[in-house]
Image 1 (spheres, helix red, strand yellow):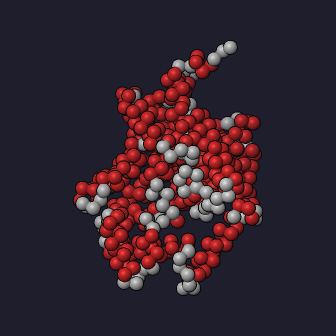
Image 2 (cartoon, one colour):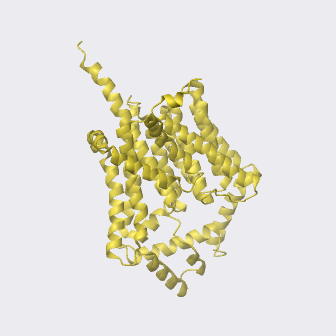
Image 3 (cartoon, rainbow, N blue to C red):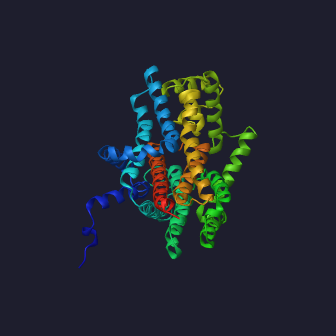
Length: 424
């Protein structure tokens, strides 16, 4: 019997696995992000001459993205050097996010087929949905969160489903049923967690798809996008999902807060935390505060009766922009914004080229754009970058997609070069 796996060089299996592993393990393993980040780092070091040569022609396109993550690390390093209360471990997350650029270098040097990323995304969405659905309706956990927590799990599951929609552009005819399965699994996983913050990101995703909807060629893909929206809408009317109860609870929380009633609710707690964070920013907008300093200042506001005591029970401010400003001042805010805006600019340029006829990088560019806008939406009511698990997943996935965009453009340019040089 023919063994096709053994006929393939082992390094080919390894290279393809590098694309498959990050999206596959994110929802079903606590240690996957650390392991594949290390593997990307070691691989990039081993392939450094080839990676450097491949990166050089693209520095103008990707330089801003690299500078954004480098600036984020520089701000964290400055806080550590000049504030004795900042811990060394506070550098871990920005350092690992900067090191995620090795994923891009690995893709540029080894040029793996991008279909393995889509297959990892599909398999990861399905595995995550099966896990969380079992927790919700098999074990009866009201707000399941897999191995992390319900909000982070739901957010990552949602963005994986959205990226599967972008990945469907690389599947032909009936093969597009596979990413369709990933889309539905990602949405089902998010619904099962009961998280509401993802609804904001859905609005941003709809805006993106309306603007670039013509890139979703074919009735099947457009129908898939409509079906996904219908699934989300229908979850409101199905009592077993709990979506309607969660939304109505949120509306009631806002009403109670505005009427001066109970503030110890999910929404009320966020509003009080935002009020306290805004006061801290007003006190010292240009410099950041260490975790112990924030705790002391929040405790002082509670002692003066300016904030309710329950705000001291929370580890962060449930808003990425506010947390970045409190922790790093204006520089911290700019660092956080840069890791979203400069990748956004990169992917928009790739998609604009796609609308102009250069469709070689459309699928990874659309997936990257949906990743960025989704994380921005998540961060409006939650700290999606608080968890190292989700922060590193964002950085690694982003740099993988950047690398896939660059290799696609390079391959298309290489294919066009001989034709352009032929004699008429």
